[in-house]
Amino acid sequence: MVFTDIVFYTLAAILLFAGLRVITTRNPVHAALFLVLAFFTAAGIWLLLEAEFLGIALVLVYVGAVMVLFLFVVMMLDINVDKLREGFWEYLPMAGFIGVLMVVEMAMVLGGKYFSPTHAVTKPAGYSNTAELGSVLYTDYLLPFELASVVLLVAIVAAIVLTLRDRQDNKSMNPAEQVKVRKQDRLRIVSMAAEVEQPIAESVAIDTPAEGKQ
Image (cartoon, rainbow, N blue to C red; front, side, top):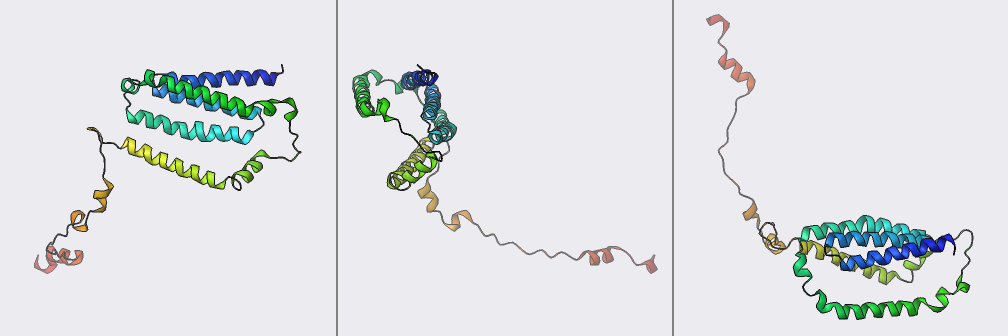
C-alpha cells in the first residue's frame, strides 16, 4: 500500500464520520460544522484524484460561502430542537432503507471497470482539467447548469422568507402593502408664510447712528 492509498482511506473515514455526525447530532449548528468538515475532506479526495479545480471550488464556494450562509440561517431561525426530533424514530426505518438503497446503487455504478487497474487514463503534458470541465459544463450541460442556478435562487428566497416570518420580537414587512402606498400617504405639503430677511449691509446701516448726530 502506497502513501496515497493511506491518505485516501484516512480522508474517506473522516468523510464518513462527518456525514454520520451531520444527521445524528442534536445541535443544528454542530451539524452544519460537521458538514463543513465533510466538504473539506471531499475536497482533499478531489485533489488526490487530480481534480484540482473541483477541490478548490468546493472549498471556496461551499465551505467559504454556502456553509457560512447555512450557519447564519440556522442561528437566525431559532429552531426548537426538541420539536424537530419528535418524529426521528418514526421515519428511521424508511430513512435507513433509502440510505441502504443509495449505497447499493453507488456500488453498482462505481464498481466493475471503474475500480479496475486497467482504467488508468494518460493525459497529455498541457492538459488542463479546468478548461476541460468548463468546455463540457457550458456546452453539453448548459441547461442543467442554468436550472441549478434557478434552484439556488429559489433557495435564497426561501431562506429570506423563513427568517422574516412573523414573530413578536421581529419586524416584518408586507410588499403588497408597500406597493399600494400613494404619494399622499408619504408626502404632506404644508403652506407657510414667506419671511423676507433684510440684507446684511442695510441692517448695519439702520442700526448704526450717523457720526454727525453724535
